Image 1 (cartoon, helix red, strand yellow):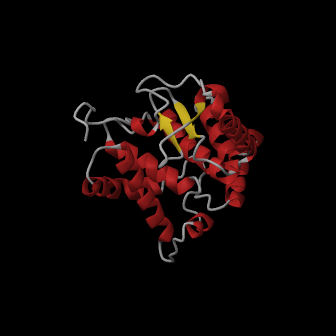
Image 2 (tube, helix red, strand yellow):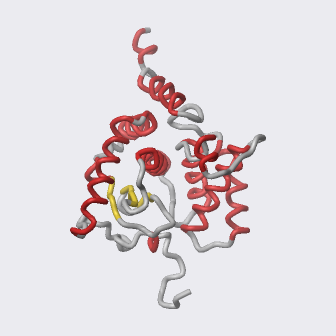
Length: 233
């Protein structure tokens, strides 16, 4: 490891277009215009049509954290190993324009990072000092974003029956923590195990695990209608 590099970089080395504490202002090299334009277009489709994203955006607005596309999303070039990230310093979601090529992938990344943003809004997560907070949000994001649906796991040639979803969530949360923090695998596994049951069973704001777009549509409908019964009493 380069001795001039700080011991903990919190994963910012994966997002070279933003300096630590200084988010990108959206200045994109002319040669990357096509990537950037495509990223912005797919982002718009995701927030307009995905029931996952629509529910999360509504829930954040209800919690006092309204999301503005031009302020809270940034399409940037990233390290080849990541698709997106949540920058807690700027409260901004980074979408890796060089690594997201399909709408389904964009929708999943937007959903995953919006779950982090929702947790940041409602739970006052200590992202930089409390590994358990980070692990909990990574578990929730993997569990609720569609990362571990059967179709996505099949596309990765990962198959299993008993508790496969749980193992997928555990594994993806573990990999995220190891990518973002300078800790050993053994320590990361211990942290994930300590918070797994509680965080896996925290389904807010969906109220369930949305295993498919159909599930997400039902969850979004229920969220939109949550106050109507009481209003009619």
